[in-house]
Image (cartoon, rainbow, N blue to C red; front, side):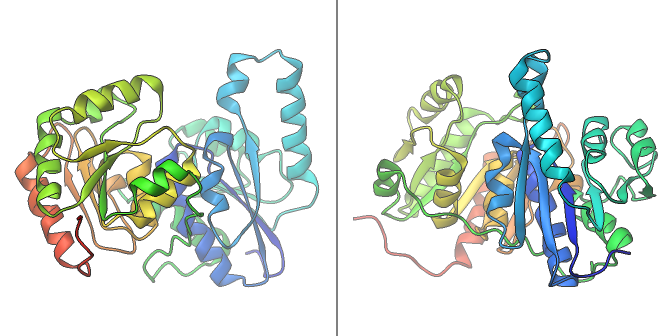
Length: 334
């Protein structure tokens, strides 16, 4: 077991929801070892999330997705050397790879210290277990947050009996257009997802937006790419009071999520981030089991649906009405 006053490394590189789910592990380590420093190895596109955690000391970025496109480029090799140098500049009391992939286990080996990861039966890729100093058996049926925390408990004797603490604080909202648009009471609809099978019918979204408008809440919609923005604008056609936000970085999106009255979103990283920031969140699952990665946060949250069992709009509307009832009444739109 590692001792206080040392340095720990969390290896959780992607994707956004997975990175959010590892935040309670950092909180567990900070609570168990108040004098320890915590570093985090993460893909550059998601680095903003561990930077929101008050107990994370250094965020060390990699760009595996970009490196794969240019494996022989001098810039790729230089970036890899820089990441290795940062990981090797001092030893770690424990290196915790909660990604469980060959690529994450390989990068974890760049750091000096005992390597902890899931065993062959528990890791997402069985061969990853061969690269760890110590392996831990964790049931695959557990929620992703609980799996990460179980790894920390085995490696560092952290306390996992208490509810998870995400420890994330949203940065200031710096985009003036988004700031102005969110100066009235609003909800956020997260209508985009990485896989078509995760998506929900446009008519369902319009029904949800009408209900939010009845509560005198503006619906703010986000898009992460040009193609998503086009699809989101088409989805918003016919909505009573929706506004499609300009494309901004994760920091500004997080700031907007944190100020929302409620978030309704698909099983996507931003939905998990909203819940971790303490916003009441309704998660819509169309192709995945929410028992494994359902919406969890410090405010009331609900996960609806499952594999080939997308909820209908009436179920989502009932859930959002229940969550709105527990919030303090806010000023209404003029």
